[in-house]
Length: 69
Image 1 (cartoon, helix red, strand yellow):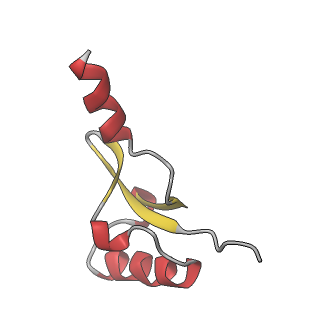
Image 2 (cartoon, rainbow, N blue to C red):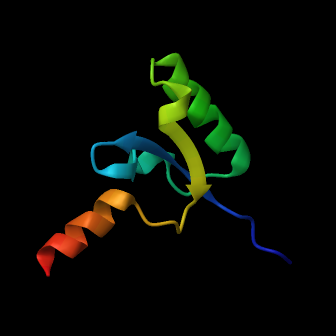
């Protein structure tokens, strides 16, 4: 049995690509598509949104970790 790939929705912000909301993490492809449409319906430009595998790190987290050193 293969495990289903999970996705999360990220938005381009001043910290780079970051997750918008924990509710839009660990989603099936169908759920992710619905969240993307919801965000666009709420006025977020499509070029500021993307879907990535749920294990993909946020740019914002990477920059925070680099600043701690």
